[in-house]
Image (cartoon, rainbow, N blue to C red; front, side, top):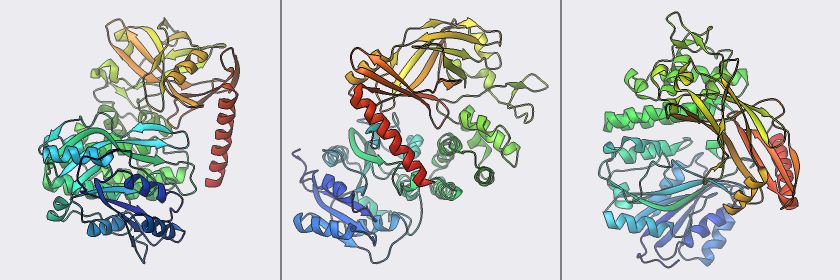
Length: 538
């Protein structure tokens, strides 16, 4: 792509023991064109072939400068600081050695920065799940393309975007405010850096262009820090980073400090809770750490959080150890949230968490139907159909009058949902509603191909419930019985269609489809690869 901007950008690439991937990252930066005046690769004292790869690239590309650290820093902050110190461009852009910059990213950011005179410019980023190449947008809907935010305090929800790599920074802005990353082994250094940036109150401009591709390799021998959550140390590090960031923002503006704490309740806490797992030792340590940190939160910030997050905090505060039904709490932390039965009431008739833990679920009676954490079970009902059971929730759904249910298949890689025909719901003796919902996997596979899905298609399966009062609620399905059996189905179009229903980490129903023999073979190989990777990680 030809650049219309003068050479103004220094791209700082940090690398540690990433010889196999750093070349692709550096190449993506050099491929931005002449707008990138230099690429500064900081080798954090790697012990593999990273130094050799970078030196060989630098011998061919004059714009590439390599900084070799003699001692490993233990984190990402110090090498980024080294890169800032070595930069000479008007703007600075950060890139990790296992990620890439998409074509035109630097041009789009510079063009927007220059148009609006913005010291900070932000663009779209995606998390690309490999090897499937599923792209998941980062913080969709948070930034509006073309928007210019004069002061971060005017948009406190900006604290939710903690990435440093999807933004372009004026180097003079970083220098004037002394903005640097935490040094040494400081995990989640992005949290602190972005807090310092927002606290400096820059004008922020937004481009709608994709500017960063964050590669997610869950089966890698060494996963990234953000994915390495096998022990409680990761959660402890995240809490400390958040505590530091919230303190920085609070000093600059109580509004931003409060927004940062609310973000923790609605995002960080729920994300880790739904991955809590079954290890009692981990659960106990996680529970204690979380309670201790929540005790430092002002009540006003907790009251400002969404109802589901407030209920989670109430349960955490109510018991010093994880309750017996802690798995119910992980499902409430999912997206969309689901509160599994049974449903108990307190002495006054108010909804409570359980008979054993009578924590009131404040504001549940007043929640809009669309926000109710409804649970819907699904079990097989013969070929091409599922039987669902919609559970009532303290009478709230019954009051709205459920009438129809409609299956929805949403591509996990992003895209438009595929909707089945609505089916009438019938009252069930249990107090809920039931229906048999038909679907055609062959038609779904055809639609997936039209949407550009690859050999293996991955779909989230959900259901929408419409009510007589005009309201509706959408949720995921909880698989029951033999619903998760893999099936090879004859297909006039593909010869064979392999279908693999599975349960996500949040306990929801999802579906892999592999059309044709090639697709089926790919799905089987991918399953074997994941199984081997799982055994290796254990």
